[in-house]
Image (cartoon, rainbow, N blue to C red; front, top):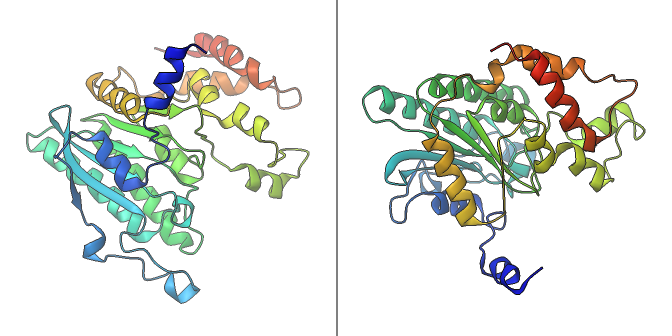
Length: 290
């Protein structure tokens, strides 16, 4: 690494090391961020304290409205340090309502894209069915808004995005990841506990990142942009994703392409992770119905 490269590394500001509130403010234009339904409104989960869990007064989700490169936008950030970013009734409703209000503003003549900062293990176990219902509302709200304005997902930290919220991530217009980030439907420990260590060794970190990591997810087309862990780089990538507008076809609607990718993998003889991108690229070219 050259001296200039070291200078660049040392001068950057890590996005991963920021909390949810700091991340949301860092993406929006300076001085424009205004938090909605913040901690001083004290809207917290009523289900945690009876189960011996201290609630958080914003329920682990931060909603910021402001300007992104001069235009209105809303940023919803999940706090990874609270309950592993788990989504419950209140936090899920905050996220879904923010998206619905962005849809309302867009239809009223103020185009308002949304940015979702997803650091979450999925549904909060203490709220079970309530959390599942909330995630369903989030997915519905994403689908409604993305028909009008971009919904950009960002997965930055090593906590990753798993469970029901990985479905929400897959519905985003565009998805941005860092190399440290992870994305998957089921977490490594869940797979190991259900299928055994022979199926997935949750202690094998190189294996986990080779399958679920940001580089692999971008390489296989399940995410769009790989970005350095740097505030400026993340903000630039988000602005570019919003400015790119609406795609000709949402990734989640490319059914023939996605089915072809699944059919290209033989479960009895799965390809090595490093080869998966090429396998799926060839399959997608054959299955692309556009």
